[in-house]
Structure formats: structure tokens, C-alpha cells
Length: 127
Image (cartoon, rainbow, N blue to C red; front, side):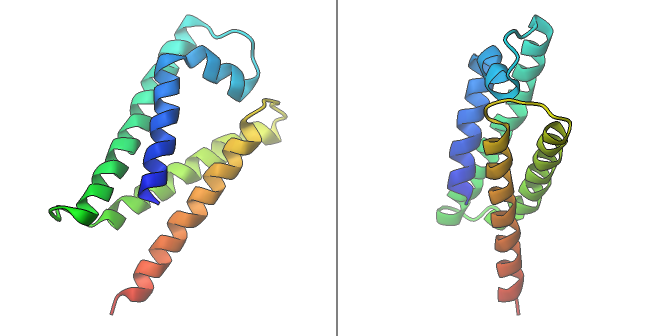
């Protein structure tokens, strides 16, 4: 899961950083992005890239020197994916039409279910 989260968040964060207008157009369907919104999207990319780096480091700790348990990251990923679902769901309920909203909703929903399953399995393995 951490590898998949790393790859997805790295790709999305890089896209937000490099081409915020293009990402905005794909997600919201609006043809133009104001300069102010482009800056906000680039700042948001920092948060997404932080998640990618955290997941990559968590994955490395599975095989290298154990600094922390990789599953310690999962509750944070539950919050992140839950918030993403709430925000995207609100946009869908309000009738926002954009080509990638439904796929983004489905991806975050699947990742949230995966995170919760990891936590449940980890709890079941504890003595």
C-alpha cells in the first residue's frame, strides 16, 4: 500500500507543482486558472509531496533500519483519504462536472478501504 500511495501522490504532487492550470482543468473542467489559484495549488502540492515522501520512508523502514513501524503512517492516510472523499463528494453532490472527479473519488475510496483493512488486520495480529 505504501508503494502505491508513494507513486500516486508523487505523480499528483508533481503535476500540481509543474502544471497547476492543467490539473485544475482536468479536475474541475474550468478552462482558465487564475494566477492566485495556481499558487494555492502549488502550495497544496507540497502537502501531497510530503505524503509521498512519508510513505516512501515508511516503506524503506520495512526493509532497512527500523526507525518506526510503517503502519504508524496509516492513520494519517485514513484522515487524508477521508477528507479527500468528503471534499470530492461535496463537489459531486453540488453538481460540479469535471472529467476526473469520479475517478478521483473512486481512487480515494479504494485507498481509504485499503488503509482501514490494513489497520484491522494489524489489530487482529496483536496478541
